[in-house]
Length: 119
Image 1 (tube, rainbow, N blue to C red):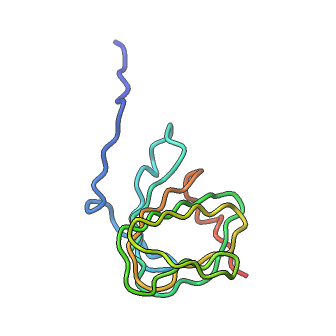
Image 2: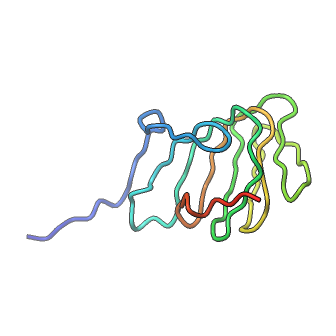
């Protein structure tokens, strides 16, 4: 008998259990999909995050919605964001979210909590 590999994956973020992260709550999709090289997170940023960086991970923040004055701090520079903004954060860039916002975070390679560094 031949095994047939499913050629697609579907995730509803409302069905993913939230996890606490330095900036609020995150729901991570595709963590267990071995042949997908990334994870995608819906993050509810509810407070100013602690500045951190990654040595291996590249993160791409797509802002779905945000409050007034929302920004992303990148290597000490405050960058204002609004719904529709997209920010790519390379490894080594110290960053944090400022204000309330909901983002889609695409993490390549897959998110690894061991690669979250704080000064």
